[in-house]
Each structure stands twice: as structure tokens, then as C-alpha cells.
Length: 564
Image 1 (cartoon, helix red, strand yellow):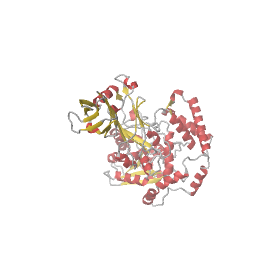
Image 2 (cartoon, one colour):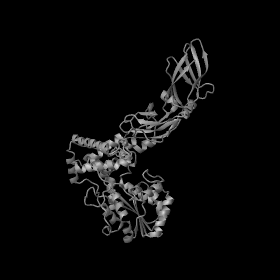
Image 3 (cartoon, one colour):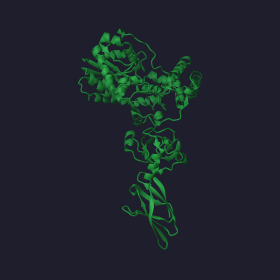
Image 4 (cartoon, helix red, strand yellow):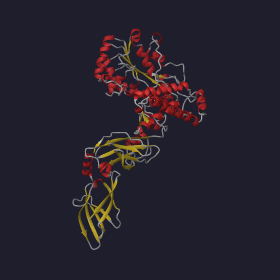
């Protein structure tokens, strides 16, 4: 193979990528014939998504089994393609490449081109947030149901840092001639701008020599239609095979009933977003475009958004509710009833987001309505993880077994990593040991071979904290509980004229911080290195029952009962 130039179009999402990919796919023969530019096999898709899946060894459910190739297999097929066509240039396009630029080095090392160009489109941050939000909602089969425009999952929108990060990654490749080519998506402030035409200019080809395939890709819904669709997703699970019908109905409804509402992001929020990114945007445009910052609101825009905000919230709500009702009527008439099921489980990440962008917006004080967390360990011994609620410094969480609440607690352990990441001074960690939980009869009465589903719920919102859950074996759980149960056993009792001495042994004293008597007129003494006894309780002579409160180093506490 002797390829002069390898071009990667790596995103970002929502910058005309779908239109560009369809254009390249439809013109791939002309691109090779007229420009020596080869757009490799995409296996029926407009972009090179399968390369990304192969590099990550993870395929989406919609990819057929016969296309789920390993990276080695897909590169073997690529080699056969290149040896057959012998192109001067090779172009790959997939917006998901932005998430794993480091792995593109596999293709670079395989092709060994003389020059590598990475083409990256950026979009003004306020418009980008709106577009990502709409996309999360529009794809009915996706898990995301973002609470606000700020609760979306994506990579950082500090473009200066993003470009620098990409540069640092490609420096690790064993190739000397690599260029990063950032481009600006201008459609938001220049309606005449064309993404395909700009892309052709960027890679040095003439669009006029190619066939301009005009297609309707990624249809846009009005803001109120997006909200109506979100209400549907919040209440129902809609199978992916019906998603196009649902979105198509709203698109048609928007055509027939045009909305005056152009955006639900306020002017104040737009200004805060652009102010937050102002410094990095100025550095980006100065260093990479030799221009002033293009990502600013124009006077015309400000006037337009001021007019928009004169529309009353009551009118907006009425429009959303009307569309939602019409959508339900459409589904009832056109989609089988069994295809809609009530959504019972929603995770915190689906609503509040959990990504690099989330962390960025929290640090910038743009995101304040946020709940996050993760279950790091879930087995027959314990549940351990962290929960952070930006609106409640001491949130409660519920532990459920087979939908039965068996424990209520609060995070009380320090997690320095969470403090550093989110710049908060709260204890977000927690650890719950099963031996400290009294299992209800509904669990104990199950067969020994029963499997138990575990869930940790953020109490205020009712959302599930995501993480490393596993279904527990009832038999294994009870065996582990009995094995690890802390015990305080009486080893000897001495009685004097007025007092009784209870000499006891505690099998986990090294885990104990303090022991306090709950029974009146009782004193407790601890002997740290005792072999025969390590806890001494002194009580009145007639005392036959003592209740102690044990405080553990990990923050737990429990009551222990001693009875003669």
C-alpha cells in the first residue's frame, strides 16, 4: 500500500456529519475517479461506525451478527480493498471517533500513509447543548431522558482543551506529518452556510464535480415537540422499531401546525454558557483560526430571544400538552397496544447525565440540579459506592431486595476522588454490610435457590443509582451473613454484694470505635489485647439483660443484646 494522505473526519456530533457522510457515500465512485480519494467500505452505513465498534470490541444491538467483526478481520478486508483500488488518499468518517482518537492509531499504523489529517468540526456551545439534548430525546430507543439542556451526556465543550487533547494523543503515534484541522459549524449564525460544501473545501475537492444528493437527514423537531416526546419517554418504553413512526408523526404535526416557539433555552442561560467558554473560545480562534471569537451572540439574536421570552409559560405548556395528547392518540391508533409498556425503572444517569461534559458544567456552576453516583461493589457481603446530590448535602438512599426496601441510609464516608472531581466538600461514599440488615420475611421465605435483585435508590428522586450490580443467591447471602456476623459473647460472670461483672469477648473489636451502654447504671470497659475477654460490663447485681450500642470505624452502628 502506498497512500499519500489519510484523512479522519472525527466529528463532532451535530455538526452536519450525517449529511457529509451521505454525500461521501453516494459519491464514493466519483471521489475515487476524479480525485483519487477512497471512501472505504462502510458495510451499508453512511459512515465508518463499524471501525469504531471493532476498535472498542463493542457493537450496538442494531448491528447484525454477521457484521460484528474483530479489528483484525476488518483491517484484513480494508487491506484487500486498498490493494484493489490503489488510492492516493483514504478518508474515514465517523463522529464517534472523537471518543477514542487514541485507537485511530491502529489504522494509521496499518496503512502507513505519508500524511495524516484529522478534521474536527466545532459548534457554538449553546446551540450544541440544545442539539445534543434534542437528539437524546428524539431517539426514543436511547436511554437518555435529560432533565434540562445541561443534563446531557457528551465530551467536553471546551474546544481549546479538546483540540489540545487530540494533539497530545496523536503525538504518541509513530508518524511525523500529522495535522489537526478544526473547522467551524456556522449554520447557527449563517443560514446560507452548507456543511457539505465546507467539508469539500477542507479536503481540497470541488463539490461541483460531484452529485449533490439532497436528503432529509436527522429531521428536526420543534422545541415543544421535543418536550412532548420526552414526556412519552418518561412514562413509557417504546421499542426502537416504532421510533421512526413516533418522530415522524411529530415532524408532520409541526409542518401542519407551525410553532412560534423557537427555543426553550433562555437568553440568560445562553449568555452564561458563552461567558463560561469565552476565554477558551478566544484562545481557540486566536491560535487556530487567526480570528476573533466567532462564538458570541449577535445583536439580532439577542433581540430575537428577547421576543421569544415574551411567550407565556402557560402558552408553552398548553402547546406541549396538546402535542403529547395528540401523540398518544396517534400511538393508540397506529401502533399495537402491547408495544408500549410503563417505564418502571430510571437511573440517575439517564436524567441527570454523567459524562465529561457533566463534570465540566458542574465545575463551571452551570449545572446545579444534579444527582450522580455509582455502585462500585455489590455481592453477598456488601454494597459499596457513592452518591452525590448537589441540592442536598446529606441525601438518603434506599437499598432494595426484590423491590423490598431493606435499608435506609446516608453517605457518610469520605471519597477524596469525588471531592476532587466535582469540587465539593461532602462525604459521598457509603458501605452497607448485609449482616447489619434485618432481612424481611418476604425474602427469608423464598426458596434457598432464589436469586435476589439489588437496587440502590436515591430517595428524593426515586432514581436508581447505576453501577456494578449482580443478582445475589439467597443461599450464598445467608451463609455469608452468618459467617461474618459480629458477636459479643459472655465468657464469664462474677457477682459481688452489689454488682455483677460480665466478662465478654467481641470477635471484631479491631473494627469497633466505641461501645456505649443503652441500659442505665451500666459501665463498659474495653481491653484491646484481651484473649479471654475484651469487653467488661459492670451492672447492678439484679441486672440480667444489657443493651449496648456498638459504633464501628466505617460509620456503622448496631445494638447488641446480652442476656443471662
